[in-house]
Length: 126
Image (cartoon, rainbow, N blue to C red):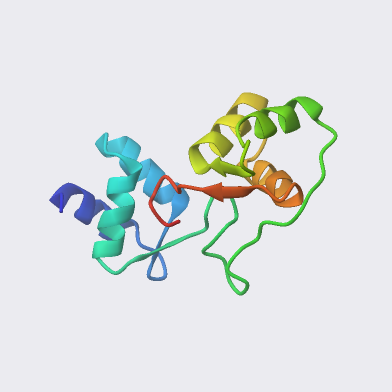
């Protein structure tokens, strides 16, 4: 394990967990792959929390994603274009949020309403 990543994880742990946002900030600051940070946290026995897409790491219900319909047909089309098998990657969900200037959780909520699964967490959590 990269000692720099290990040290930074330990410095950023709050209540025994490392938030998704902190993991991505750490990866960017060290020019490391987010998946390497997620794996290092796992190797250290530190759970990831507060998923930016609302899919895990929240108390008490573990997730905060909730079905949400949208009137933004362009965004919905972008999601559908990337999910022919009713699956979309975490990275694609983040990109859609960035492209449309909306919160990541909104993309996740729309996916939930459309019964589209989000796969391939960039930190390796799912």
